[in-house]
Amino acid sequence: MEMKLVPCLVVSILILCSVTRVRSDASNHRYKVGDDVPLYVNKVGPFHNPSETYRYFDLPFCSSGPTKDKKEALGELLNGDRLVTAPYKLDFLNDKDSKIACKNKLTKEQVAQFREAVSKDYYFQMYYDDLPIWGFIGKVEKESKNDPSEYKYYLFKHLHFTIFYNKDHVIEITAQSDLNSVADLTEDKEVDVEFMYSVKWKETEIPFEKRMEKYSQSSSLPHHLEIHWFSIINSCVTVLLLTGFLATILMRVLKNDFVKYAHDEESAEDQEETGWKYIHGDVFRYPKYKSVLAAAVGSGTQLFTLTIFIFLLALVAGIAGYTAASFFCQLEGTNWVRNLLLTGALPFGTIVVIFLIWALVTTPLLMAMAGFLPFSAIYIELYYIFASVWGHRIYTIYSILFIVFIILLIVTAFITVALTYFQLAAEDHEWWWRSFLCGGSTGLFIYGYCLYYYFARSDMSGFMQTSFFFGYMACVCYGFFLMLGSIGFRASLFFVRHIYRSIKCE
Image (cartoon, rainbow, N blue to C red; front, top):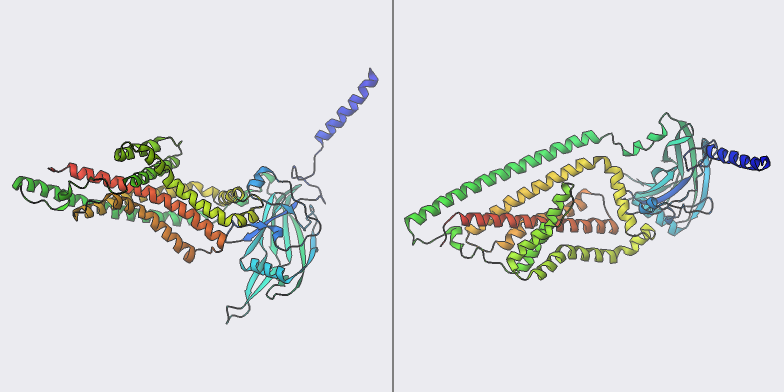
């Protein structure tokens, strides 16, 4: 019995030792001197277009040996990461000075490929112990100050890594390119490139738990927010004051009209009617293409209700569809099936068409960029960039968007009502479509401003970025067109019913 207990006791001791032993690897981010800390290259892309990214070795970089793809987790796949072993070896607490990573003889085609990337300000991204690293792959310099058309293109050959550690943890890493160690890519000729790197380790007191805080901080945040808030409040107050003045003038004009028409009814019953009262028999006639108008107003109402519910952080219910259905049932009576199909097809059918055309044109490029994750990787990567860079500002942006949206609704309603009054005063009874288009024209104005912003104010360029920008903005502005058009129409409808209810029409 005692002999049987001895093996069990030994096995138990070994199990306890294996459990209590402190591991030294990437799984717990603890390392000993000389341990291999994982360094992976991820992707490259133009600095001014973070949504356009490619694999690191899509550019003719060299490697110190056979590359190996990292087995990525689901989060890394959804983020669009394509992690591959790097040619640089950064052992824990081992300084290195001008170490050769790899050598490569670039052909003319590869030189042209690198030169094109440098001209577009391509950057690279790496990960060292799950810490991101960014840097530019090259630089462009003017050869002559008198002739700005002459440029020299250079590829950086030497990277200086500075790594901060706290005991057995990696805390921070930076990569700086040596501006004096470059390869000339200006001419289409073969170039021998020797990629080198240096490593310098420094101690820091920052704890491991706080090593990611630097990636979510911005020292200039309060200053910029103060300026933006002042500009936004100033613009909103100005717009509201002008809208208030317009509403006051319109109310006084209407009051005079009511007094005038009441006086005319008492003085002479056979007097010829003029002004907007004269068209009381035609103003409520249904317009041409009333089914399309009903579907447009119903779709705009759905989008407006959805937007309001999102802003209020509430669940979206079916009240939008009920509101839309009740409206176009008033116009079309028993043709509710056709109106239901139109209401569903008008907003989303157009967007589907836009995305289909967009997908047919851009799918090959998207597949090349995303590595067999053409859509989800890029879209979620855009969200990842937005969340990582702007995540701490999300509530501020949310508040600004809500304020701007409310201002748009108020201005659209009052402006459309004013134009409808001028139209009726000119004895033009066809106000239905004009009121919808008047309100929806704000969406066209926004898209026009997008054209100006893209060409005059932004640094965006290239087919992919152009298609992304104008494709998304076309969907957004189309949504604004429907929403604000329905707001303008409903405001005009309420206004027309109110003024004709307030006078005696026979």
